[in-house]
Length: 74
Length: 406
Ligand code: HEM
Ligand code: SF4
Image (cartoon, rainbow over the protein chains, first blue to last red):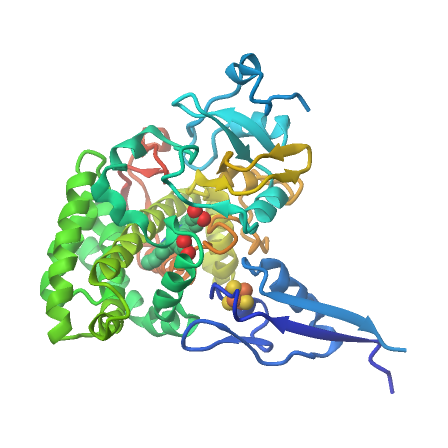
C-alpha cells in the first residue's frame, strides 16, 4: 500500500467570484456553478492526482477566487 | 529604463511611439507591437490625441495588472485612455447608455454582474447549444440553395450571431428582423450613433410590454426585478445594450476571421475534419491567435510598481491583449497557429473582474459556427485572393466582407 504523500486544501471565495466558469472547465469534478453563476466547491480536499487541475483552475480564475495549499504528509 | 514616465520630461514623451497601430495582415497583430514589447512589457506610449499612456504588451504583466483592484474603468476620468479616434463620437451624453458593466467599478459592477450572470452559466449555455446548431444548419441550407458563392458575413455569420442574441435576450419572434437589422447597422461606423439610439428606444418600449406579458429570456428574467423595484428599467436597457455592443461584433468577427484563418491553414483544417475532438482546442487557439479586442482601457487608482515601470495613481493604461497573446515568454512559436496547443490562458476575453461574461457562449458559437460550416460546405474556399478581402480597423478588428464560393 502506498501512502498519499501530499494533501491539497482548496478554498473558493464566493464573494469575489465573477462566474467566468474557468474553474469548472479546468476541474469539473471539483468545481461547479450554482444557478446564480457562483462557484460551488464540490470537493475541497481532493486526491493528490488532482493537483494539476487545481493549479490550472487557480491560475485561470480571473478574480483569484480560488486558492489552495499543498502540504506534504509525513 | 529611460525616465520617460517623469512628467517633467516632455521632450522624452514627444518621442514616444504612437497608438493606435494598425494590422496589415488580417490575422496578425500590428507588427509594431513587437517593437513596443522590446521597449518593455509595460511601457510609455502616446495616444493619437497626444496624451501619454502606459501600454501593456506582456502576458504575465497583463494578468497581474488586470486583476489588480486598483484598475478603474471610469471613462469620465480625465486620463481615461482613448485607444482609437472613432470612440470620440460615442462620448456623447446619450452614450451614457454604454455605461453598464464594462464601464463600472465595484460595488456597482458587482451588482450588475450578478444580475445578468444567471443567464450565462455553463448549464444555461449548454441548454441553448441545440438551438444554435439548428440556426447554423438552416442558414447554411438557405445559403447553399441560393447558388455556389456568397458573402459569408451577410449570408451566415451576422444572422447567426444576431439570432443567438435575440434568443438569449428574449426578443419576440415578430420583432427579430427589426432588432437584427438595428444591430447590423451598429457595425457601420456611419450609422452607429443612430442605431444605438434606435436600439435604446426599442428596448425601452419592449420592456414596458414585457412587464405585463413576459416571455422567455434574459430580459424577461430581469423584468421581474423591475416590477419588484430592485432594478430600474433604464438600467435593464443598459444591460441589454452592453450585451449587444460587447457580444456581437466580437463574436461575428472572430467567426469570420476564423474561417479565413483555417482556409489559409488547410493542413490544420484537414486535421479538424479527421479528428473533430480537436475543435475545442482549435477554438481556444483561434481566440488567442486572432485576438480581436485590442485596446482595453483602465486608469490606476493607486501607485503600482510592476517590473521597471512605476505607474502612478491617475495614470491611464491600455492593454494590448493581441500583443500579450503573442508573448514569447508565455507561448512557444507565438506567431504560428497550432490547434494542438492548450491555450486556455490566452487573454482574448480579458482578465480580472471584467473578464468576458459571454465567453462560454462565445466558445459555443465559435465551435458550432465553424464546425457546421466546414461540415456542410466541405469545398468552401475564398472567392478572391486573401489580399483583396476588405478589412475594418477599429476597437474590434474585423473583415468588411468575406466573399466565398464552393
Ligand atoms: C469571441 C467573442 C468575444 C470576445 C473576444 C470578447 C471579449 C471581451 C473582453 C476582452 C472583455 C473585457 C473587456 C475589459 O476588460 O475591458 C469582455 C467583456 C464583456 N463581454 Fe465579451 N467577448 C466576446 C463575446 C461576448 C458575448 C457573446 C457576450 C454576450 C452576449 C459578451 C459580453 C460581454 C460583457 C457584458 C462584458 C463586460 C463584462 C464586465 O465588465 O464584467 N462578450 N469581452
Ligand atoms: S474561475 Fe473563478 S471567477 Fe470563474 S467561476 Fe470559478 S471561482 Fe468564479
